[in-house]
Length: 253
Image 1 (cartoon, rainbow, N blue to C red):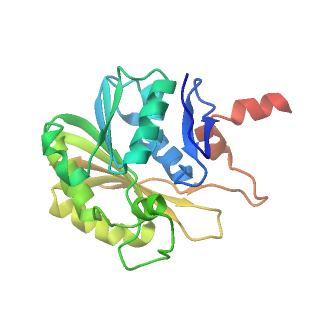
Image 2 (image 1 turned 180 degrees about the vertical axis):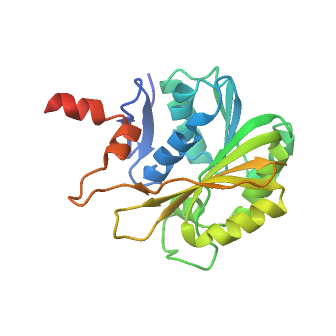
């Protein structure tokens, strides 16, 4: 029996029976995590993966069934959120495959070996300190602002953790793209694939998905744009496929 604390609930991820514990007053996962898990779907079966800033474990939980890795390590600095992730892992019976570490990503040398992971995935804080609204509760503040670790920290640590030619998968904001590419290259992580995500056709992009390889040669592929909503305000067919709902919705018609 999984214990639920005040304001917590269990959400059905509607994918291979997976579920997750969330706190409605804390930081719940969004579409950015779902899109990143889909973007990283090319990671090979049996790979070793580390999720920097795992939050409640959504990326690791989804990838555990999407690609069947040999091992996933999640790193989460916030003790309460780390404990939620541990309970979600137990809820999904993933203890033998997915472990979480309560640590700042900058202090991982005592917990994991460098140069050992096939892939790093991360949905890091999007906002620099001193920008954006900051009158939020502590969990949201740390998750959204670079308080405990900067963009450069996430990228530098990723390089250290990856095997040679290993891949970093990241979701971020397009207005940070120039900084991201500059920092990736400075850290010898070569951008290989970029995909911009738009709320709908007439809107500006609000997310960017990035893959970068360690010590790779330069060659960048810009993938077709991904639109979340169509002109009628409904999810596009691709978003429905990503959420795994297309077949279900067709069967309901």
